[in-house]
Length: 334
Image (tube, rainbow, N blue to C red):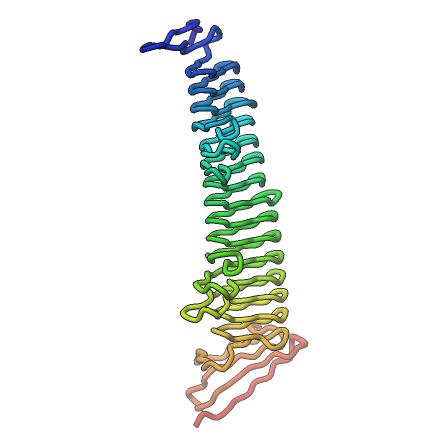
């Protein structure tokens, strides 16, 4: 489109719509000095090339094609997009409280603030922050929800009010869910950080909510541990599942696996030593196949049962620890 020069606005006391360079300018003290930029609104500034600033005190200040949209009572309160392709949408209503801030290349910050809480902030390349007070400083990183935040070095996702990720390749989904060590996953919700799920050791997974107000939510504190099971359920003092040792697995409300390579299954069940599967005092129902397994199906130190209906017996096969010796046995069924 050719430069048409200065175009006048219309209506009472019109202002110029373009400057001599063809940039679009509308509003008192609006500034559009970037090539092919647009500034609309009192105090709006589009100083970036192809920048767009719409709203009072909106600012697209650097980089190429930065976009800032919303109106703030001061420059601080207005939105600021200050990197190539950055997008900032939202303003605060406090003169000294920052509006939305997008300062990383291709970063997106959407969410206004209040007179106390700042707007969304996306400070690293490809970071995305959506929601009042949401903050994404990972590259790439996603923070969605009120005050959701991530600060890991890369590949972090925090979704939910006050959800937090603070290490590389972490995921936290739900209110007050936290994933604080590399490769951790935390899913579920709690009223605060005590009741919210927490995965705090490398590779740990914590899944479950907490309806109580005092007991811990789900905790996965051992390396590569897994804790699944919400707390409370009518009992305000019942904690969520807890797996606190390396490779431990806890499944069920208040289940606890505090020994390495151990598994606790069921409400309130706790492991007692390493390398065990503990189901507590609950009745266990196992399938009884009608045929024997192949010798090769068993690994070292393993046993398998089957029901021999022709002889009326419970048969079993064992493989010794050496991985080669096979023994068979029967128990009469009466």
